[in-house]
Each structure stands twice: as C-alpha cells, then as structure tokens.
Amino acid sequence: MSEDPESVSAAVPEASGVTPDRLLHTGASDTPSAEDVVLASGRDLTPETLEWARRKLADEGRSALDRQLP
Image 1: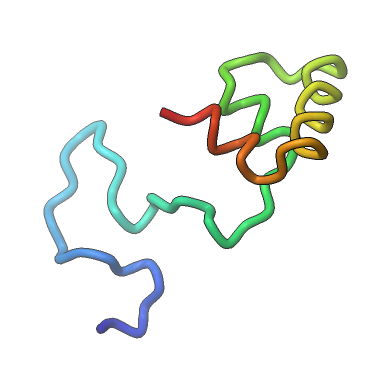
Image 2 (image 1 turned 90 degrees about the vertical axis):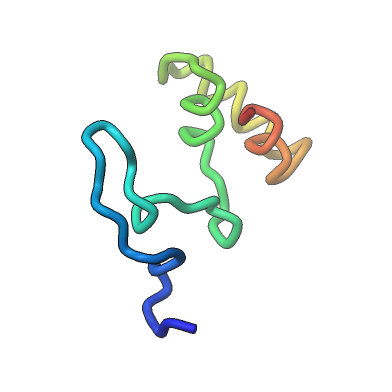
C-alpha cells in the first residue's frame, strides 16, 4: 500500500481530456457545502439556489449531495 493518499492506481499515461486518478475523489470524508449541492444539481449559484441547498443539507445531510450525483 502506498503512503501517498492520492495514489490509488498504477501510473498510466494521461490521455487528453481524461481526469487522472490522482485528481478524482469521492469527498466521503468532506462535509458538503451548499455550493457543492447546487453545482452537483447543475443549477447556477444564486442566492435562491444556495438557500434551497442549505435547506436540503439541513433536512437530508450528506445524502442531499449524494442524491444529485449519478
């Protein structure tokens, strides 16, 4: 096991337009913000959508973000 927390797979030449493994993460240890929920839903960041996201986070917790993702 590697000591580097970002190292999750063998080194592979990076193809153009493909996100490298070292940049991918689930955010499972992070607390999602209202901005995260808005952006995951595909909406624009506005005062109204941020308030909507704050309510969803208050009601649903982390699953508010998880439900927005495929």
